[in-house]
Structures are given as structure tokens and as C-alpha cells.
Length: 471
Picture 1 (cartoon, rainbow, N blue to C red):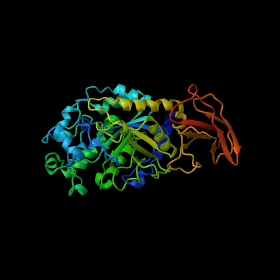
Picture 2: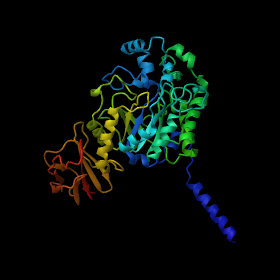
Picture 3: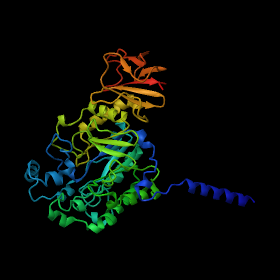
Picture 4: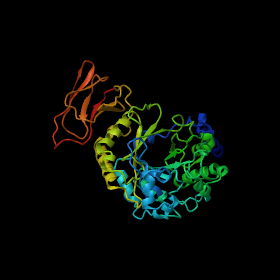
């Protein structure tokens, strides 16, 4: 009898688990029903890393337009187009020097993944996304795929597993680790680019993967290889171009990921899986150097990525004025989080494996600010009743439970009037013990900023008033 009861109980557990388990079909209707893992909406701040063969020349003429300084596009927009960029390449490396010849020079001889992970942890970031493969096709792990032979970091250049080494170090620091993967490779034009490929015909003829093999024998197997080896918490796809997700076989891969992968309960994917998916499908939408007035809704997860400079890959042509100040980065983080998004802040290490000191300094400043004010960033949500956003605002809001955080990027000279809040149980200034006075006036909460001096000011760049039990 006991044996029967045990068998019946075990059968019941199996039935319940089977009932609760969701099987996703390889179509967006089914995939969009998945609830994204909650860690992403709590994390708010991540580090993006663009590092690869393009980090050797590390150059592109600096432009003021959006996207115009991307040094990771060296093969296409420096070598591939007449002008000052190509003139630089011919003068420094020679006109017959080909892009693939940079790979042996990408040695990463000073790369210390534990140091990198420590810098990221101290910045206050909660996750890291590394370029496992950019549009040039070079892999930062020792892939077994036949079409990447001698074009990966295990066989050429560093001759080590850069993705694996950093993944181990980042996770030891308690951070989530994600991977960027370009589904496009310039050397193998997709159908919509056949008439106007990114590279010269002779390069394509030499290195092109057969069109009928690219997706099924190269792209999808490599994605599965990355998932199996490293179990990333984020897969940041890029390079979909004008092809659909059906062409890239994206929906089938994502269904496999959500159904069977070991990391299925933790991983999120973005929306760059086909032109039909952009801003419509995926766990989160991914914007890039978006203008301040670009509309993003808190109804769906989203993430803005920007570099500390104008380029993602390290660009030696950039000067101090081309880099964001610490204040600008912190204000960007505040702005994006207040609108319901995450900020993925990019760094571009040099080819030897060092994070440029100016980037380290910026990350350290962000970390110091977050140590004092992180309560107003992490685990927060949009305050739906906040005043309308403007391009010139200096007061921002986040919410956590019944508490409202009023974040000012310029210290107020007069009283702060908070529309939509009539009263508060208490108001305090994060990181400061000086009492903060408040009152209700004309249906608004009015905060009187305390008198501060260099000895008791809690942080630089921005300050947070916590309005307790306001809702």
C-alpha cells in the first residue's frame, strides 16, 4: 500500500510539472508568451565590451554624426572606402595589407580577466555583455565550427578562450555574463546585400561561406555552441540587416533555447533577430545611441547601449572631448532608468587586453555614485504619475514599492515641488544625515533642500531625495 501511495504521489508530481512546463513553438506568437526572467529589470546597469581584431588598428576618423566613429567597422569604413581612413591604412600598414593580417597582432598579452571583472564589479554594474563575434566573423572563443577555422582566438592571435576566461571571472564576482553575437558576417553577403556587399568581390570570393550552408551549418550551430559552453544570461543578437527572422532561422533557435538549453530559466534575448523582429519581438528591445526624445515604453523591457566615447571598439583617434564625462554617464543612466530602461555602457579595450585608463576612471566614478545612490536605481520601476519628460529636465523619478526617489542632476537653488504627491511619511537625502524638511502645498509635495557644504555632501554629479511611504 505504501509503495502504491508513493508511486501515485510521484506520478502526480510529474503530471503537475508537465502541466506547468511551457513548450514554445518556433514562432513569435508562441515565443512572445514567455515571461522574461526578472533579474534583468532589476539590474538596470550593465557593461558592454567591444574587443577583437579591429582593436589592433583601433582607428576611424572621428565624426560628429551618430555611428560615424565606430572603429569596429575598420574593415568596411576605413579600409573599404576612399578617403582619410583608407589613406591612414595605406600609410601605416600598406595598401596590400589585408584585414585578416591583423589577427596575429591581436595578442591580448596583458589581458587579465580577474582585473576586468573587478573593475566591472566596482562600477556597480550587475551584468556584462561581451562581443563573442562581431560582423568581421572573428570568434573570441575556440569554436569548433569548420567555417571559422584559423579565424578564432583559440587558433590565432591570443590562442586562448577569451570568452571562457572572462565568463569565469565575471561570475566569480557575482555578476551575470552575456554574449553579443553577430548573425551577419561581412565576408558572406546575405541575399539583400548581394548587389551591394560590404566588402570587395575578391575578399568575398576568398572567404565566403556557401550561402546554403551559412545559417544551418554555421550560424545556428555556433549559437548553440556558445550556449552549451558558456550558458550566457543574455544573448545580444545583431546584424540582421534587411533579412527576416525566418531567413536567419531565429525563431527555431530561440525556441530551442527557451525549451531545452541549460540556461533557459535565466537567459534573455534582444530583438535584433530579423527586420520583422526589431522593436516587436524578443525579451527586450535594444536601442543604440538613441536621441533623448526617442519614445520607449515601460510596457516592454528595453536597454540603451552607448559607448563612453563615440565608438564601441577602441578608437585611438578620439580625444578627451569625444568622451562622455562622469557626470554625463551618470545622468544618462538616471534618464534611461527613470523611463523604465537599462543602460548598457560600452568599453573598448586595446588589443593588448588593457581597459584604457580614462574608461576605468569613468567606471570608478559611476561606481562611487551608485554606492551612495544605487537604492534609487536598482530594483526600481517607472513612476507612472511622474511629470512629463522633457529634453531639459533636471529632476527625475523612480519608484520602489511605496517609495518615490526624486533624483536631481542639478542641485536645486529653491524648493522642489513634486506634482502628484500630497504628502510623505518622511523625506531624506541618500547618503546624508542632515534632516530634510517637507510640506504639502497646493496639492503638491514641497521639499526644502538642506544646506550642504563640502564636508557633508553625499556624492557628486546627482543627488537623491527619498520620499518614503508616498503612495
